[in-house]
Image 1 (tube, helix red, strand yellow):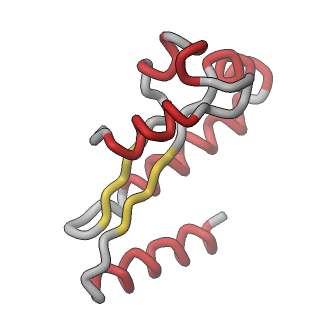
Image 2: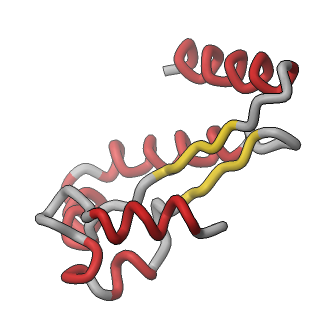
Length: 101
């Protein structure tokens, strides 16, 4: 949604002007969910890739983007990072928040 992206960009600019740091975390998808999304709904998968790239463009001095969408680490050992087929677990969340991409 172009309007949502515009609002996010404005928010990032406002926060930066006030000296407030912004961290945007783009979470990973469960490997099976990602595989099926690519195969069964490629247009939705493609839109998500575009969305992640647009969010990445918001990075700046006070805005950090942590993009884990396509990070293999969270796909290589699903049992370590996922509670079920959609929701990552607390260990994965802590790792995403503590780790620089």
